[in-house]
Length: 320
Image (cartoon, rainbow, N blue to C red; front, side, top):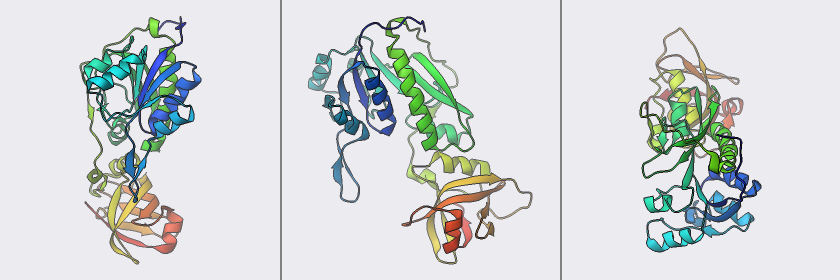
């Protein structure tokens, strides 16, 4: 990328829906470019009352009185004509939640740019943050990608890397990558006429499939390292869980929000509680052990291990 910057005020269509997208939208607003339209998912029923609720991006767009569009999809001619009339230079897409038709991709002068939270071609798809943690990746990042008709295969305009620590959860890594993405897209927009796209490698592509709730069940015959990755990857959703026996309950769902790996030499049955007192709870796995730190019994609030131990003594955690 050259140092020469874009001299004009860029006309932007922004497309995004969840919290990950909000920081990017704010960065674009602060960069003083012209946001001519914000596209997000339609309001959806939420909570026990199933009340129609706006997504985080819509709430932020309303704060700034931006022009909001919420079509069910972008496939019909009328929706595409409305988008074309916005006369945008570029469309910035961040976790929008819809596949863009090829016709839409070609409408803006500079096409559509996507902020993807991995170092492509690794972890194309819906859940790159969680899959990177689950796989034990030591590094991830974000890429600003020129969108094409295939999923996450376009040319890369800019990449920024980010280490994955042993304590990173999906939430903490999400927050780091959102900040990186916000700065990177502003950098790209300030250099729209001076970019050098890089083709993605055709080797080593992996796919980050969407999370399923059933993946959250812990198999205690796995290693402590792998289970800990699962706990971190599924926090805050869908949260790793197991069935547990205790002095106060039997075979109740227990969610584990935080734990740390302990290396032990002795053999114990996976899922057996090796030690549990007011300060600590250590559980055997197929290889090593886990020291449980934050737990949540079904229907109760999350507690640190000291508070949890004041009420319960775990006796057994069951393999999936």
